[in-house]
Image 1 (cartoon, rainbow, N blue to C red):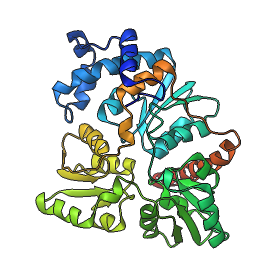
Image 2: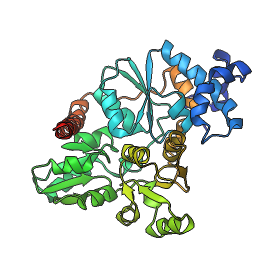
Image 3: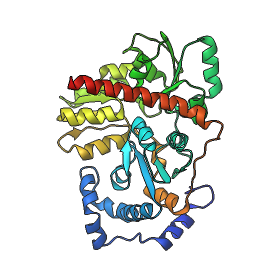
Image 4: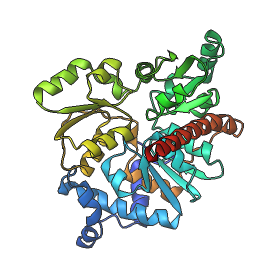
Length: 362
């Protein structure tokens, strides 16, 4: 296994050990105790000495390098709580990327997220700890696939999930996330809307809109695995459990759930309703992070791991900051075309949020 394309992990570890104090001590235990307290509900104390030295080194180094770490909700708890400056779902990180002043952004997530940050910040240096952190949705569609769909449905706007490459975004009219997909689709003037690449998200959106949705049949390797019989089995094995699901799950799974929403929506729902027992039909680390912040709720497994997200580790984040690798670039000719659908999405989301805030005050 390589820490990057050029250096084996053993050599990289030796390089890091030569520059940073990665040893455990009572002093470090006291220094990082406030971070571990956040993780105590989901991390055995015996595991903390393996993480704390890297967390200290990363937090010190990012200040020296004037770097900001953006972490998706699917990052492991030691990354999510230990080193991230901004954490959230795809929409939150996309918006945050436009407001970051630091010249260096370290994207702890998958590659399309780092591309999105570069598209919105072309003058900044965008780093990803492991460029092999991909996405089954992003790899399921290409720009020419979108053009083929346009020919079949002339005049229909294309709304593409942010889980897409820069090239695919550039071929789209609007982007969306699981948090705002229904709002974006409803904002379209056309009665027919093309959605890519997540077919399950598109079907779940179709159930909440009067628009005719034409969709690409991509799926997330995390959420496609869950089934309706599994959900019913969870309930039978855990009487009184609340089931909340991500809209990337198959529609029959979403119909079995008590609530379905984006990662941020799921977090907000748990914090607001404080269920006694809950099972989150989503990625494992997402469930761990929410559990750490909501100790009053018992979180029932199972969950599903994203192998791409798990490529991002504390060790690779430190290596990334130490070396400036791996930098994410997007061809200059694609950036303005890819930025437009993202900016349209953000503008619509901001407009809707402002209207709802005004209505709440009325």
